[in-house]
Length: 486
Image (cartoon, rainbow, N blue to C red; front, side, top):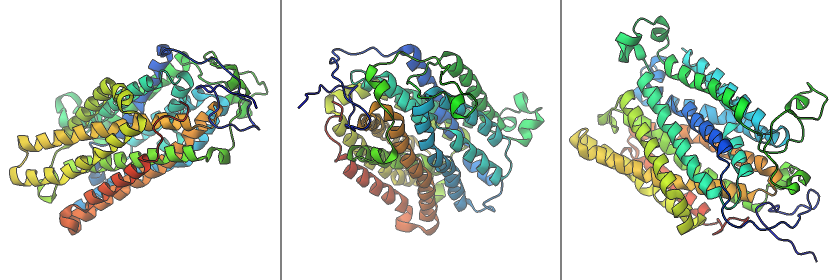
């Protein structure tokens, strides 16, 4: 019997048909992060959530303005939920294929395609004046965008077990910076001829298309980052073929992509596994934990701006788009900074599974504060106490968000081999995209029904969300105390 030394480079499940594990020296100490490449990935992480969150402050007003609700205020939340779900529904149909393709042709070409899709779809969204044109724009963005999963795969490519937690401490910071900037841009630049008549009042285009300016800003940023990615980002994996050859445009096997130095001779001997070989127990457990966390997060984010925009007498806060954008921006800044400062320490102290469970448990008070805020607003109006409760709810959300950093580490560690990291992330992202497609529509529909029918005193939606937290706790309990690769 041959003894094998296991480290972060060794396949996590041995598939004899695909790879022969080789003995490698054990890494000691902490490997420095490759900042020249990691900083570009972080900047791309900032752009991604900006794309989805920029529409949050003005989505209710957009739905009202295109007349699809026929003036029925209670139906606004339903159509906002549909709009939010469309991106993830189309993403679910394509993300696994983009991730598998990135294992073959490299991560960089897929990132460039995604940035192109973001730019085109955002300009299209800003110029949309009917519900169906808005629908097509969001579907286009989701179908062409495989960047989220590819960036996760790139992080796994350029890190190891000694610096992975450090990398994932920065990812929430970058992601939340985008979540903060997106609503801020959307809230401050929507309807610019109304908000800033002396500055934009003479532009007929912005009068005819009041949401073009915030969407155009995001579309332009996507073009800028396309150039940055093309010229400065190195390929992080070893493609088995060039993208041109994959499309049938070239007969040469040689790839012109500039790549980072391979981390191991072993990787070149590995092959991406077929789909059925990805469906092992630990991949399923990590994917389910990710899906449960994403369901909670997307449901909260879907209901939150609608709750803020709902009139006080109907159970909300009656805030305008600008105020909603500022609150969502504050949430993003607070979340990013606190994750950066405390995630690594909490992970080292509690361990992966305990930090995940601690984060998920914080969702109970987060959802319970919705009816508390509504009750206080009805009794006192928009008082300091109401905003104190809103602040506590935002803090609970920040605590809950640590679950994402943990679950990303579990997903990468669950990959059957390193040549299938992209496919493993793609599988998990596909499932989560389905969840995120369903979540906003279900949550906002439940919110509308709760208000319209006064189910459980108008609080039925919050009980539904509490049930989601219970599911996440159950799934999180099945995670191992340590990553599978450790």
